[in-house]
Amino acid sequence: MGKMTLQQKLGILSDAAKYDASCSSSGGAKRDSRDGAGLGSTTGSGICHAYAPDGRCISLLKILMTNQCIFDCAYCINRRSSNVRRARFTVDEVVHLTTEFYRRNYIEGLFLSSGIIRSSDYTMEQMVLIVEKLRADGFRGYVHLKTIPDASPELIERAGRCADRLSINIELPQDRSIAELAPEKDGADIRKAMAGVRLLKDSADEPTFRGRRDRFAPAGQSTQMIVGADDSTDADVLGQSTRLYGAYGLKRVYYSAFSPIPDASAVLPLKDPPLMREHRLYQADWLLRYYEFGLDEITSAAPDGNLDLDVDPKLAWALSNRDRFPVDVNRADREALLRVPGFGSKIVDRIVKARRQVTLGLEDIRRMGGRVKAALPFVTARDHHPSGSLDAVDLRARYVKPKQMELFA
Image: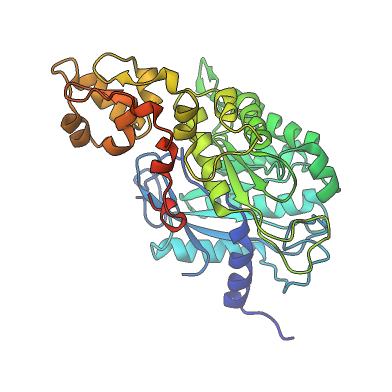
């Protein structure tokens, strides 16, 4: 086969990157070029979309440096024994692609990952060189760099100096699964690398008498877990996420539903898990981080350790704790209102602010954006005093939607 063109490489290595879900620019600072000779925008193939906290849609060039790999992780399409077409970018090719996409305003940043070639240190150094060269050439876009756990601390420190976000994939929820499915990796080593990144970031963020220290991964670090490749329950997954958030200050844990791969190992499941499982995990993760739910509260509504696929985790908890309802929208504290199905945090804040001036009814809640139909059995209001609705045996069934509609609700 002849030499590949850059476009052919882009097709292969952007497609290979789609299996990495941890692509987000959340937490990144908005850049502009007024303070230097920056390139491209400050506000096709290989482009993915992520969302910043302010709602801006940010386009990233998402690619692997190479899909060649010396590791043989059973769940990975790019594992050593996989029969896939291989390609590899040079450092200059990635710099050229990123710069040209950026100049044309197709993207606002780069998400760069890679298979392991030669050694972890060699691969990590090549990736760091790409970002360092981009920065030296004036590239001011957002960069999310996938780091390799057993790369040297010096290389990871260099990565954090030039990238906005670092991510180190934990891969699977339990160490025993990592040992079985990815024997060349070690869960303890992965967490040690995460700890190193946190220490470097904490040190960089600590003010000194001269101001802050050097910039280091200002958008923090994230990780990804594959769901459904082993026998871990949702309780196992969320338990691991809770520990990772607490111990390493992660910005985000991403959940990636296992997708069957060609020539798969016999240790892997024959079918992929329901996509809804991934969706429910994200909903539960949101409750843990922003709605003041405890892990035990969410898992208590999942007696077999797995979240209810038919209803969302907040509703599942409410149905299992009907004695906590109904709550009065005009009197209940913020924590109680956050647990009402159909009420998001913004709606709750609007309710708390508005009820200082007026006694609220259902129409007021609807105008604020609350999903009144979902909340009806769980609240009282000026014009709504349900009697016995929480005792209805078919209450759960009223909320179950057709499967094809759920993800778009």
